[in-house]
Image (cartoon, rainbow, N blue to C red):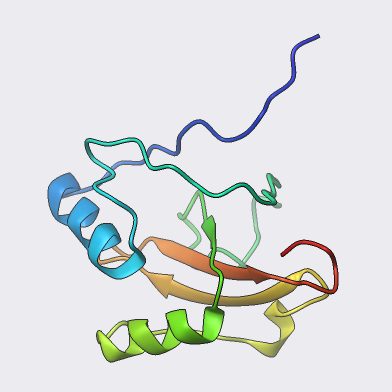
Amino acid sequence: MFTVTGIGGFFFRAKNPQALAAWYEQHLGISDISRAVWQQQAGPTILSPFSRDTEYFGRPEQQWLINLRVDDLDAAMAELKAAGIAVETRAEWDSEVGRFCRIHDPEGNPIELWQPSEAAGLA
């Protein structure tokens, strides 16, 4: 039997793909996602379906939520706030697996940033 070894891609619709790719590069450091392969660092990945009526994703019509690992959540939040990007945190989001915050891209898509917990052996 074969084994899935990781996420090969994440594809989504956008009103302005070029502008959105530039935003992801400028604010999240993900190189031009519209034309290049982004090389990730090895680390934990969670693939988890949620109930259809979850409120965790935000808008009811939102079908996905991408979670990106970061090495320093405090620095990420400071840089994003300095760039005028709203950063949301909630105490209940933080858990034994790490700390989280949420931002939205210019098209309103939720992006969760996650600093995995060293104590849980995830960092």
